[in-house]
Length: 170
View 1 (tube, one colour):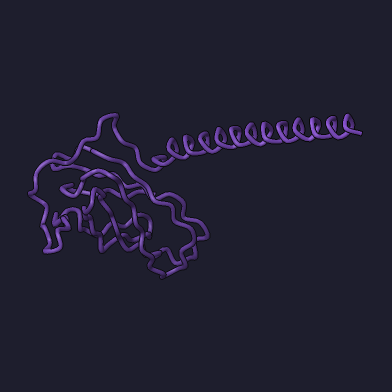
View 2 (cartoon, one colour):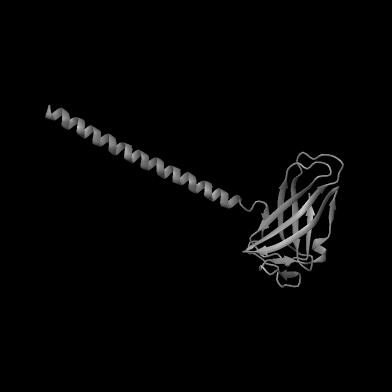
């Protein structure tokens, strides 16, 4: 009887050890999967932002006003000009920089006379005072009804607030 209890006890210990080792292996595999997902997310995070290998911030402050709350706002008249791309009107453009991030916010109006089910990517070229493209960004736009105006918003962790011009294309 003692031998049977001892054998059952040893089998239980072996089973518990096996289960513990199995959970440990599965946990390590899950960690590997999570790390791979994180690496893929890090790689694809800037898919819509084409940056040179070394960040190039637009130098100077000639097109910049610093608001009382510390937000830098672009004041370039060229940057603020309305753009019409085949009936898609982009206006009320604002370029700001705060807390390490530049943000472009603009109104996009569908003035084509027809509903658009999926507009797709709107590309933004950020240019300095010489007309050199210093950044390329994009924002995805789904459906826009005829006559409808929506807000588009693109951000980048680089100081481009001093840009002289933004060129939009679809």
